[in-house]
Image (cartoon, rainbow, N blue to C red; front, side, top):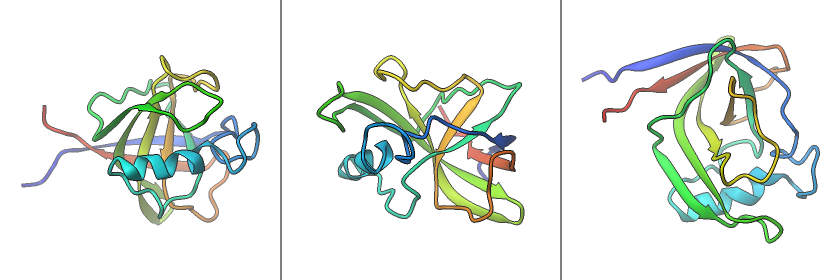
Length: 146
């Protein structure tokens, strides 16, 4: 049986830079600090780039309604309160290449700062050579049954 999938075009946009460690006060970035904790909970992201690919899907608004993984109370930094995260598998296509990744959603109600606009999707995936701000990508997500 084929599973239903939704595909959305978006444009790569600049994020805050803290996920990858380009900016901010977390050496190596927040994703690098969170990856081992996600792995302990059953999601191995070691094949992925330790940062997020930020994709604007404007004018649409992003909503992750049925995530595959929900991790509550993740204490990834001694300087921050525990956070909740949801992740779900996706496929990112850029030009003629596709990679398997995960939509990454830090729950805003537990996140202390660095919020994304509602039309930006954050993705953790293997590095895609040649991708830059302004690149057009397609995000494919399998629809899950209730």
